[in-house]
Length: 108
Image (tube, rainbow, N blue to C red):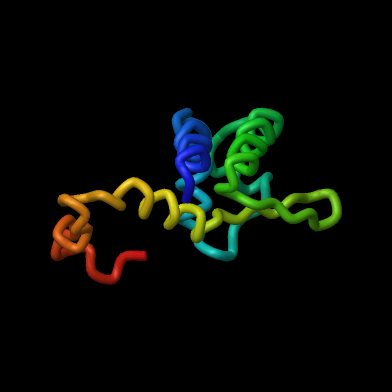
């Protein structure tokens, strides 16, 4: 991931509702969720959610797919991993394996 892409992703996540939306989509996994279900789960209005989903999509963190009048959203796990890798690339004097805690095994 390039620095500008990381900045775009971090900027998109630096807002309470967008962070909650992204965490919700990560939580539901690769199957994702319809916009209406996300709005209901988080207690936000559809128009507010639409604005925040657009920002997350612009940053490449989520992708939407139209199904008739409804849009289904999924977190982009490879983009999320790219951001984490970018943030930890120079960890522990360029030895990221030293930064890993024993209880990290098996996490995605």
